[in-house]
Amino acid sequence: MATLTVFTPAYNRAHTLPRTYASLLAQKCRDFVWLIVDDGSSDDTAELVRGWQNLDNGFEIRYIYQENGGMHIAHNTAYAHINTELNICIDSDDCLAADAVEKILTKWRQVRDCGYAGIIGLDADLEGRLIGKGFPVGMTETTLMGYYAAGGYGDKKLVYRTDVINRYPPYPVFEGERYVALAYKYRLIDQDYKLAVLNEVLCNVEYQADGHSTGMWKEYVRSPKGFAFWRKVCMQYPESKKRLVADCIHYVSSSLIAGDKDFLRTSPRKLLTVLCFPMGAVLSAITMKRAK
Image 1 (cartoon, rainbow, N blue to C red):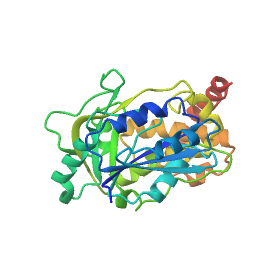
Image 2 (tube, rainbow, N blue to C red):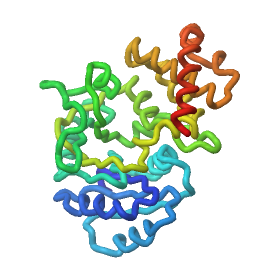
Image 3 (cartoon, rainbow, N blue to C red):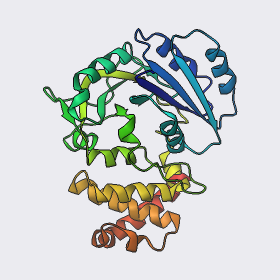
Image 4 (cartoon, helix red, strand yellow):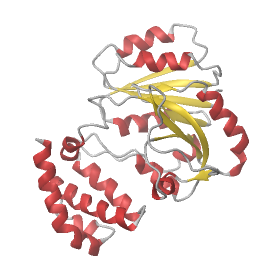
């Protein structure tokens, strides 16, 4: 059995998946499985993947099709079908960095018995420029939330133990909505585990014009229950006092957009929610306007 699963949620990405595939072929270490979760694509994704499965790639390619449910549902599906010790998500428009598999597994052999939930590494763009901020000199372990609370920023690449990530609840499903923050599970894991720091670029990323990192104003309106759920989690496990207030304002805003009349009673920070209501109401009006 392979040690690592590289899983890729894909929705109409037949035009970018070949780049991801090429980056996997370029890996010197082939101790991995590639799992593609097709989230209801209507393009040539299935045919493309079937063609690759018929080739001698040096690694197994697994393909699962599901009705379109959103990125978080694709992650749920992936986690339910991963049977390797470790897993890493490489999006369908990104590339696994050169020798990333070898770097991950070498690091893991060093820290496997130290009780970590996995490894945290770096992202760079397609030209190799670091995304955000690197790790402080001498940092050997951190939580994801702790890294950002200490002034870190920018996307980071996470490699989790499969047994750990499946120990926590799956991403919730809200009817008619297609977004819940992937950081939900990561925030829960942070309460119990640390991550070993690997100060290496593991993924080269490109943000698509129609990707999840863009068009967030519209997403706030399309998936308000999912956003309100995430803000409640953030309020339960805050990064900082300043971030707590911001999350509470967003919680009020998303709850109002969702039409949730019970949001004050279910808030984990009731007094703060009352105090943040005016700003949350203003934000909800701004969101609705910006989303048009």
